[in-house]
Structure formats: C-alpha cells, structure tokens
Length: 238
Image 1 (cartoon, rainbow, N blue to C red):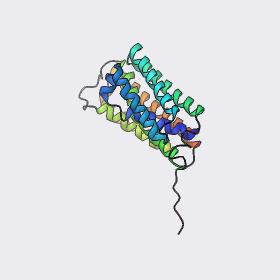
Image 2: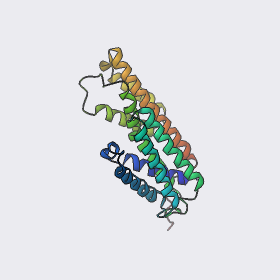
Image 3: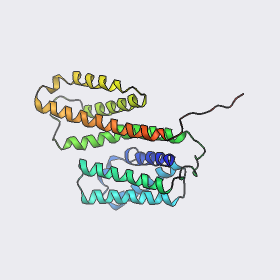
Image 4: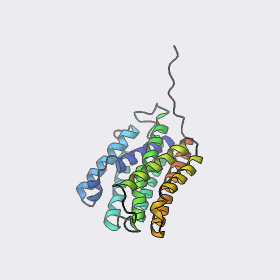
C-alpha cells in the first residue's frame, strides 16, 4: 500500500501543480476545461503507477474531477475551500491505495523497489514548495494587499518558495536546527521593512503559515518514507 500511495501522491502533485496551467485553474468551471483536467489526472496516474488500463485510475480521476467541480461551482476560491479541496483529494488517494494496495506492484515499475521513495520525496518537495505557495497566498489574500512598499515583482513568491524548499531539505537531511537560523536570517533582513505594526503582522503571519505548511508536509513525507524501502541502486559485481 505505501508504494501505491506514494505513486498516486506524485500523480496528484503533477496533475495539480506541474502540468495544470493558470488558464485551466481560472476556467475550471467550464465542462471542457474539467474534461482536460480529467485527462491530465488520468495520464499522470497512469505514468506514476505504471497501470495503463486499471479501472482504479479512472475512478480516482473521476473522483478528483467531482471534487473540483463542486468546489468551483459552490465555493469561493479562498483559503478554506482550497485546503478542504486538497484534503479531499488526499483522502481519495488514501482510499484508492487502501482498496487497491497492489496498484503499483502490479504495474510496469513494480520490481523497482526504490522508486516509490524517490517518487514520494519528489512529490513532497513540490507539495511543500509550490502547493504551499498557493495555500499561503490564499490565506494572505484575506488580509488585503501587501502593505510593504518597494517590493520586488514576485519577491514574496520567491522568498516563500525558497524558504519552504530549505525547510524541506533541512528536515529531510535531519538538520532541523537550521530552521532556527533561517528564521533569524529572515527576521534580520525584514527588520527595516516591518517597523510599523501592520507590516510586522503581515510578515509574521505569512512566515508562520509558510513555515508551518512546509514543516507539516515534510513530517508527513518523512513518516511515509519510513514505510518504504530505502532509495538505492545495487550495482552488479564483476
């Protein structure tokens, strides 16, 4: 089961955060756009599980599209609906892996024991960084426009992306103490820009949300990784 869940998690991350362009997110209320996203979910699930004709893949993709359709038609594009949408997607991945635990093992890559952990780490890195950017952005939209003047174009986006990437690497590398240095460095660099209360609160909320997302995702990935065979390729003896 863990192997299947790792493969399905990577498929989900690729479908939602790598191959899905911005225009598709904006036009997802249209049936034709939902159908294109359905095809993307099917393709990434096939690619990651190595299953080309499994009914489970199509059922998972259908559940994914139903969740997306309900969200775009019935809820606003804000933080709570977004996080709920992602939570439901993750639940469908877990249910599929529970009902079809051998989906990966019976696929094209079933004999590659180290591949699921590699998939999990790759998916975790994308989910901690890119997915975290969307989640934190929607949270911060609730507090209005960025109050810090003279910011670089997309400067906050890249700062958040890099800090979440560093947190992911530090925790995976078993160097959690480095997160403290990251917090200190950001506090020093942002000091002059946060002299008034509104700016300080903006930075604190955004930083805590970004760090919290990255830490939570990384810890979940580390737990899942502990259930999988280690990454390693044995070379033939000569």
